[in-house]
Image (cartoon, rainbow, N blue to C red; front, top):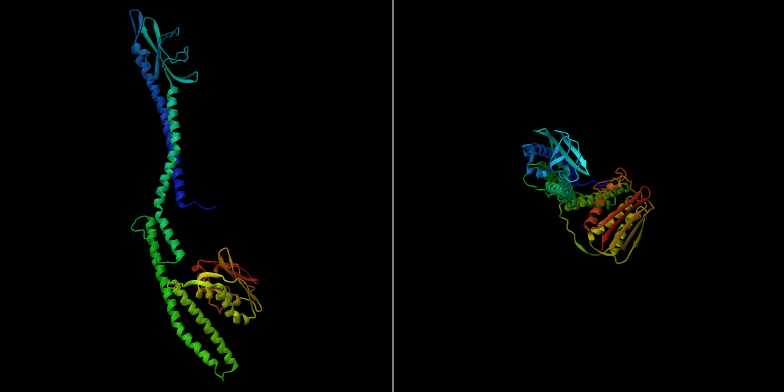
Length: 449
């Protein structure tokens, strides 16, 4: 399963953590608020009942009641009862309240009547004259609970928007914080794509870890670039220095081979030496070419190339080498296959692939060369029935100087297939390789046409 990006993971972590903290805080807040509301209602009820004692008096043998007892201040109803008979003397209670509820002086009670929740407090009052009264205060808890529920519902409605806003803010902050990382990644990918080691991240001045990482990375790139340039210069210098002595040796071998007094054994040794010099010269030439490629001094000269004629020419050039191992080259070339390409590089590509097939082919073997067009693409397929390539070696065959079995093939530099791959890439082509040990290999190059 594909891993989530660091930005997404940070956003998810931040959102989850913020959600948990918010849930905890809201839960704690509503719990405290609910308790505070309850205590506030209880305190208001107690104060109202106590203050109501001043609203009842006994004068000239009769009870007098202040009209304020009829007012429901803060939703609190007051009523005065005769303690013995339970008769309501003055005041009022909420509609639907239990009229015959027993008295409990000095007690704060919660009762339910007709699905309504009430808070009740009774307080005894003795004014003399043999009258024992009870002042009852009643207030509805349902209204307070309804207000609390509305607040809770509003919080639940706003909560998803709060989570979304938190996630958006976390995403924007994470993206901004990780922009330097994206810049580092972009630089690395561009270097990997075009091999330009002169690129740098250049984040500027900063004190955090990411800026320090970018500065370290730039310093590393400078070190690598300097090392690669030294290596390229060394390769170029060595190759240039070797060309002249190799040319002299080649000329001397040629002159020596034409000496009539030379014995057959010596002539064979001279011929072997000449082949070694030719192989060495070819390797030096390829090193010089790779040096120009690495230093980006290689210029393509693209033109409309008749690949049918080019492949046929390359096959003809390789017939003598194939005949030395009794290998038959069988061609199947579609006529008038054109593409935009550098003809010199294409010749090198075809010759390198055929030479590779001859080198690793068996005596009396076969090489099949096929050129054809399909869906606006040009395909070059070269197959042999040679020794093949082991599965473990396939990922490495295009590496410079790589040889699957150096002990058997020390005469080859291991640069041919690396050159083939580069030629395919600079022509915006693609390459496929399949092989099986002891059964042969197949190379397929495709190009736009």
